[in-house]
Length: 281
Image 1 (tube, one colour):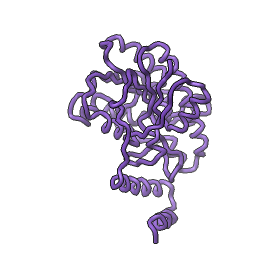
Image 2: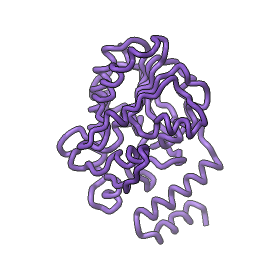
Image 3: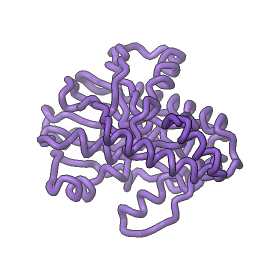
Image 4: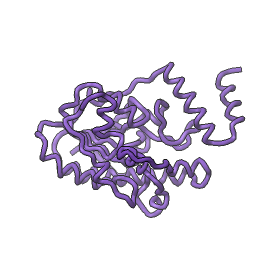
């Protein structure tokens, strides 16, 4: 019996979707430890402002850019990871003292960077994930990231580069009324964890696993989230100088290969393929 046939037989025996998913994640992690895939190190590329979209797939970015007629040079690149923590660990081992990081993602904080690398890495990290938080939306909306950048950028030497990390298109989906209905805990669990408090993680993906929400609804709302954040990026780009590149830390699964979200160490194309978009000004 071939390995693929064996895996298919095992999956048929597992009835619950979440258990199938856990089995597949372990299988993929083992496979990619044995057969690792390389990825792009962002510090080796030329940019002045690097805009990071959280969980943004290349194929959907390409589609939305075409629809919105955003001008620039688009490349498909392979991320070094399939989660934010993995992306950070593999991208920033070297000196980053010439970079100010504006982070709306709680997993990129001064505490976690020091915990991961044993020392301070960036010139500074602006914790937009904390002061830019919207309790109703359960995330940091993109306009709060823009406000933080323009508030603090004048405090740093002009030669410093900037990484601006937006939470969108990652859930929770906040672009319209239909999307807002899907909001549950969003990023609250990660934010509270950074503050030393615990909260049970509960997201839209849990409802999809239970069959309460169709994947197609989440997919549409994800795309609208991307449109929303790109509008904010267009506003930002008109007011700043230098070479601006848009990329992502990782992609997102919508049921492909039996997976949802973006588990750590699972280096399939849906999670590895991200945009590298040189914005035309």
